[in-house]
Amino acid sequence: MEKKKLNTLIMLSALMEFFEERQELWAQNIPLAEAIYQTKVLVEEVEQLDETLSKNKEGLATQKDKDKKYLIEVLFEVISVLGAYASKSGDDTLKEQISYPLSKLQTMRDAALASVASSILATLKQKADVLVPFNLSENERNAFADAIAVYKSSLARMRSNVNVRKRSNEKTTELLQKALEITKEQTKRLMVPYKKTNLDFYKTFVSTSKIVPYGTRYNKDDENPDTESKEPEK
Image 1 (cartoon, rainbow, N blue to C red):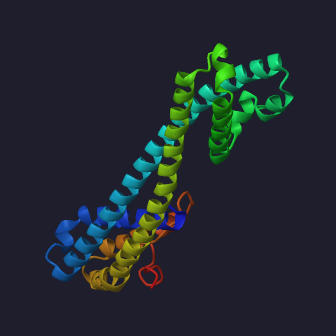
Image 2 (image 1 turned 180 degrees about the horizontal axis):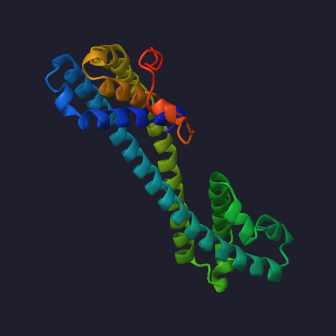
């Protein structure tokens, strides 16, 4: 989640916790209670959406890394055997085509790795007959092809997830904007009478409703703002 959105979510979550701990002070104030409830629903939806996206991203990334590691293992084995064949047959062109040390495969970009693997698979098929003695039979080719297919599927799921995250980020923005609007246009206004009836409650609300950049230190005085100069931004 973007820092700006995260900072907003942290503030709204803290505000909901603040009201949750002081229900006896506002529960009978129907308009305020409704505004708080509406904001809570929006915040919970954002939190759930973010948690789901984070888990999906982590799971897909873990699986892709696992599939990539296995493909590199199989690919390097194939390249090594092909290298032996090229050396024995004096095929310098093939040597050049398969000149990929393990370190290069491990640092290669995802799409490039898939392309290189597919190209080498094509070479295996072209030289199928002469490679049988080198233990690169049809079974080995099929296993290699399967590893490539599985890895490409992982990449496709990752790309699809990018689009899902884009749509979800747009939804998150919409939800946070609604929650902020309710907080500023309803909750803030409905809290003003508490300046007379419960000043500490009001001042703590003002402090809690400030959006503080995540990880930024702020003055202790911010926790006890002046009642006139430290109100939430309009």
